[in-house]
Image (cartoon, rainbow, N blue to C red; front, side, top):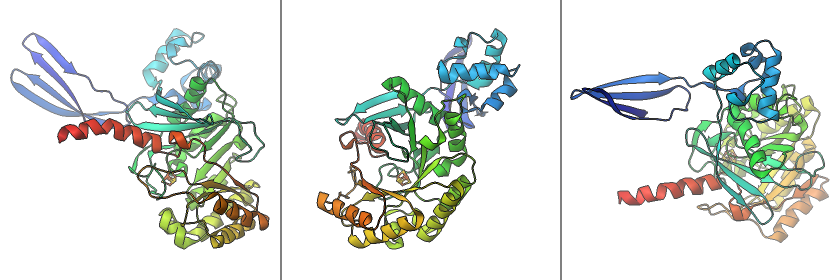
Length: 402
Ligand code: SF4
């Protein structure tokens, strides 16, 4: 709980300690000092809703006549202003009303790291000081679906992650909170502004399990996809999940033609449960059933992501089982050699082993590709940069307690 403190002397207010409030439903302890006494009480604060979390019909309910909502969306997503005051074709009274009822959150760029292969990693600070990451991946052969010359952004959906996959940096410090829709949308806009490049492909594969933040994710996707919003086609948006079977089914019943990538990372329950605890809740049978339901509803192929980890999931037998699952689903397979994570012991298989694994898939008529994990030199695997930065920031404090 934050503490707001104010001291009064006989002449009245003397000093105050300001606190920054940003979290929803935050409680603040207020401490007043006066005439040698101290009075404590708590205040429950409900911050304003961020304007970039709203759909057009919601804006219409606030801004009348209804064409004003279109003008607001134009200021937000085409002209990309950063304050209500800049919306100069709106009447002053409406701008005041917006400012009184909504907020205009921004995310702050803390670090941008580029790598030799021009993958760029962005570390952002949210209004509550939490850190998240996005990665901008330059044009490469079609990762998910359509042929590409695309600039793909890998977006985070949570601060940290509760799913604890054993090979992943994002789960190392656990889950902190879900991102709100505006914080998801803002990653894309901030990367476009910072890089000067237009994004045309989005993968929800950054920090967090996207389907565990289903409502905010869907709300953000609707804004990203809408012609009045960022305007990126649904077929250029891919959600990657560690395997939340019920949410995959729910997504299948959504009208949007979004793509699905499933982080399989093992073709058997025994190994998968060892490296991905989510498999103990939704085993391969349940997951593959949900994938079948998704493909039947959407009439599109899904992608299996498979991180190749030496001596863990890279055997010929795993390749054969993976081929069986992929063929049954008509799924594509992306093989990704493991990207080292500080503090974890896993390594990637030799190039020969990687090629052999790929050859087994291809000989079984599976559409498969072997990808080099871009940005190894900038800690591009999800969650690494945030962890390094947070631990770096924490280090002096820990030393001083010594
Ligand atoms: S791989 Fe994805 S689901 Fe698993 S811990 Fe990392 S962020 Fe979470």
